[in-house]
Length: 184
Image 1 (cartoon, one colour):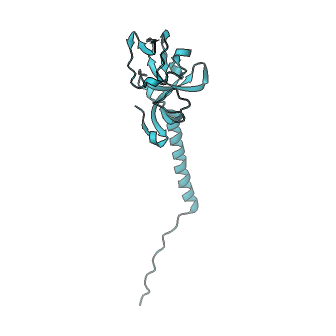
Image 2: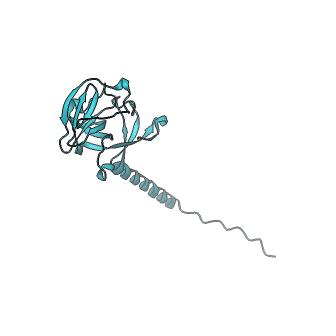
Image 3: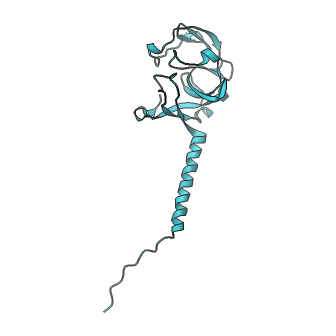
């Protein structure tokens, strides 16, 4: 009588091969994350209250750094940019005037090229009722304002932003979780 066949053991892979596969996967993941952060999306922490109620102090968002390579900045976009008076600092504000636009603030109402700009995103308690003289955004510059007009340090104070200082467009909130989602 023949002895019962013994089950064949699966040959085990060498430990170094498992480590090599693991290292490859980690390297690819880190590389992909670096490409996304460097070229496409950058995480940013909002500091301050100048964009209330749209963005909260300490809120974390993603900025699309790639969008303006294919599309023009639009009036109403919320952008992150290097502060013109100190490029080591970054600010986040809403674009009100495009290059060549004449922006004037009269008793808190914003006029672009002589037309009143509707601003439904600003609650009455955040409106500033002061007036500021007309300023024309030169070629290659945008005029920006914070949504919390009473506390915002913006183009009314220090002028326009050169387009080369624009880092990107605010597109997605990820922290705190109750604010998670696309920024419209």
